[in-house]
Image (cartoon, rainbow, N blue to C red; front, side):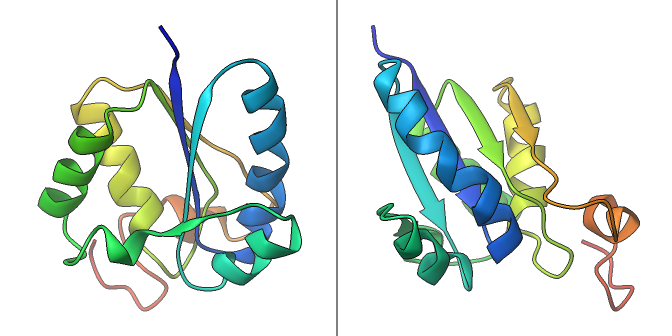
Length: 127
């Protein structure tokens, strides 16, 4: 049975660390689902990686909608980038934990980690 890996990023830096994973995973026999949002979509094209805009699949930016999305895809693993100003990765991490799907986030740089992993956004709004 083929295992499925969901890859997601929002920011260009996250895309820089996620996009290079696509081909090695495919060569290992994994089914790779690549999703992006915002600035990452243009960045994926620079890597010749076809990414699906997650906003086409998830209409409301809520935990419940991400839960439905992840359950529909039913990936075996999830790997994301990190963002400071967008909650998509955070929602995906929470949903993966609730669904017992192993997940990890790859840091593209060592700055703003408090913002990236806080329950608050850059403006101090609770997620």
